[in-house]
Image 1: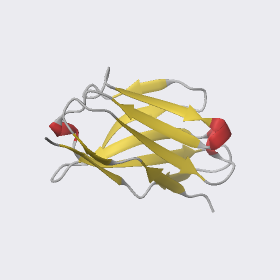
Image 2: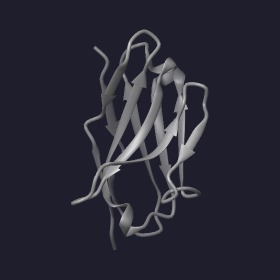
Image 3: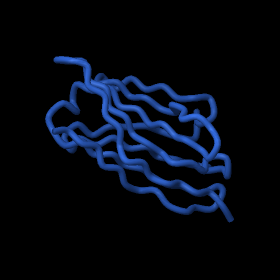
Image 4: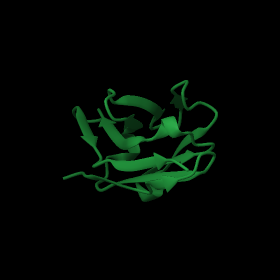
Length: 118
């Protein structure tokens, strides 16, 4: 069974940098679209970055120019590099996998807390 395991969250000062990682077990990673979502307290979960199996990326306006999503298919891992972090980036961050190569499969990571505070 495929699972997603996230790592890399923590406490960082405003203006700081953090990198999140999400590793998938199983062989479907290479055909999957990977996304990062975040959910702040009292707010809905929002998609902030996506990377397709072919490497095409897209970002929410709130993170464009500051965050970079990338994937390493050899390691079944997707990363979210975050620069110039702001207090409003504080949230639980989730990775998401969608694969439609055989049937529809959607998975979520367990979430990792990112706190931006001085």
